[in-house]
Image (cartoon, rainbow over the protein chains, first blue to last red):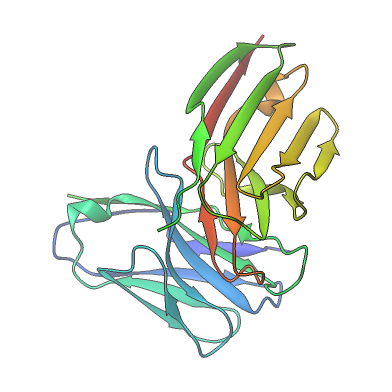
Length: 114
Length: 112
């Protein structure tokens, strides 16, 4: 089982460039999430998708868009990258709604915007 | 925005010592989770606590959920180098885990 996979692992962008971060899970989970992690700030939710066909904003959605392509895949797009978006991005999935849920995380994408 | 403050932010101890990490909020959570994250990897769930006052043990790790479900603690007995990592608490107030609020994190280093 691969669990949650993310591509790419590293990326350097120039200000104004665009890119899409890809995420896929093979656990048949309904819910998927995108977080960013910055030093001293824990993980902050960017967007989430409670089920296929739905997406909702999290705590820090500005500058990002998402697409829930199907049940397995959830992508995050930066249309015009800014230095403030330099961060480590994590995708996660879960079978939300159960009393003992767990979020499973991918290995992360380290993004630098210069 | 609900905040979960963790303390201490950094902790460096020697093997064999005991330690406690705290996770505090002014908000009530229906459940709270603790994750551990190692360098270059995503967080991995350690435990979920759902009842006020609940205590759960995982080998040398003891987790407690506050009576009012606003705070939690993680106590490690006889720390080992393998305990090194970033510890994150995460609270859910939806009851369905549709949105978790993560704490600021405690970075623990255990040396020989």
